View 1 (cartoon, one colour):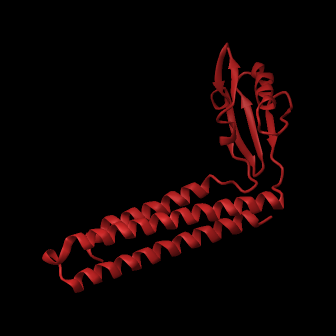
View 2: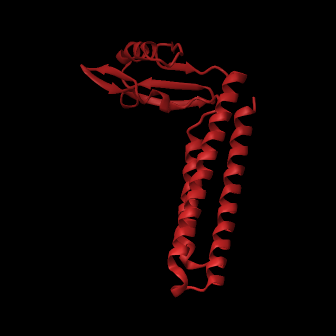
Length: 183
């Protein structure tokens, strides 16, 4: 591959990596401790994130367990979860609080798949924009710096890169969609 195209390949690669990390945040019916990030509990008069007043773990795929460092915080944490928009009732056994996430409905799974496809399409558009920028740069080099044949060759290499990364995006999208639809 031509060294002049390296920066465009790097950008395309970063686009695919970003999409992959974005897909990581879409949880298919599994408990994700990040749902608690916005919740605060009253800790000696100070609103404090739950992660800072106890140990948050995921012992099973659909359960989040919160073990506060001080037992007196159990009621505060329980109250914060009930007041939130999580829509999950906490269970308190006197030592830990458990949040049990329900299975995803078929409808919710289909919505998540739509979201996955939308993100994939955005990734493809980004890759195509990078290709366009590369083609524009090749045209700017002009006849003085490179021959017509060389310019055509660069554009073909750029198209091959584009095809490769769009195929990678399709593979990611299919895998994530399949993961979401698997019950």
